[in-house]
Length: 331
Ligand SMILES: Cc1cc2nc3c(=O)[nH]c(=O)nc-3n(C[C@H](O)[C@H](O)[C@H](O)COP(=O)(O)O)c2cc1C
Image (tube, rainbow, N blue to C red):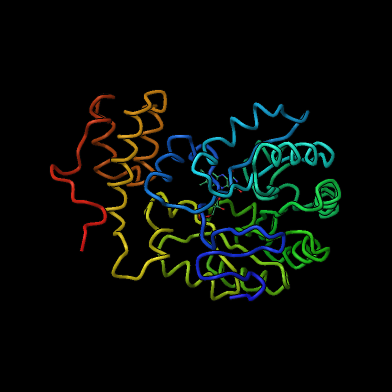
């Protein structure tokens, strides 16, 4: 593990002074709803958030809009880094200032998103093709807000992962980013299987020098996260893995004996979704519940097909087992 990403086992102290969990949920636009965040808070499944992207296109959003965006992440008092996506340095700097005024503890720039619509607009992963634009945006925000925690999220390249040889030093040389989040695939690879993801991260960690690298990609088990740290990454952001096992980040902080099995974790997560949607009915959306079930158990699973036949009431009342055991039985 890189000493520069200092801190204890569970937290990293970035050079801006921000204390942030070593393992945290990878941002997932469309998945991280207010319901999702509330459930994560109730079950204590994270100690910090990096939000999904907020797109900045034509103007600086009003504080009320940004507050509404941030509120679900901030409600438990955890540190929140707001992710911005855009191509206009002045607008991004303005929006970053507003996000900080609204309570965000840091700003992360999305230079990673592979969505076709985003790429067509020149934002997200398309920015990897214009190193000058990326570094220009970083400098403009740093000049406007010198004391904030500023970071980036990239993929290893646009077409070829070896583009990281130029991209990473350009982003880290000025010493601006607090950390660099790296999904090891290229934009072109989208979510294809890549055999050398960890090797790529190992190289990126060397290229980043003293700037901590937070790895991303294919962490589904505690052992995967450990392997990611062995590449020199200071931490990991875990996206799809926390749907397949919502207690994965929790488990990374516990001894093997005290870990929650994936299936037990999925059931408790879904049960807490049900309880929370009953407490706050405007949180309930049938399509979202089914989407979560598909992501949690798989779109071809018997659980998911059973759920699709349920009425809304049944979706909310379904019990996995009659006497649900306590999550943390007193020993
Ligand atoms: C549904 C979904 C939405 C995502 N939205 C974002 C996003 O808003 N910002 C971002 O930086 N990454 C986003 N990602 C990428 C993930 O954070 C992560 O880097 C990627 O999925 C690889 O990690 P994983 O194998 O742990 O899923 C998204 C991924 C998924 C599956």
